[in-house]
Length: 145
Image (cartoon, rainbow, N blue to C red; front, side, top):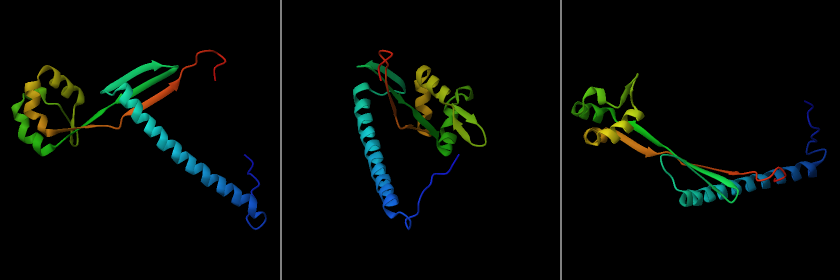
């Protein structure tokens, strides 16, 4: 790929300074646009809603999806103190080099055996991950831009 012919500031100072100023202005616009998109995403989350999973709606030629996710961590010392309250076959733990929560078993236990889950829930910390918002324009006709 041929290299562009960029002149140094000694040879043509106005060209380089103009490009640097334009670059700086574009960076400012990019930051403003990113901030504005985040504001719009917050509004979309309020309008569409958020759950652990995906909600998709179609409106005014746009497909809008919100995706919520939880992350679960386990406190090993608390787990050691509460695990005997639940039969080992129900332990929502994956044993690796360190213990990790088994998200599928946790969900199953919360649904099927909430009383068992309540006995050990203090060993687990659940946080909501940053929600995702996807907005895509739907093509209505072949010549739609």
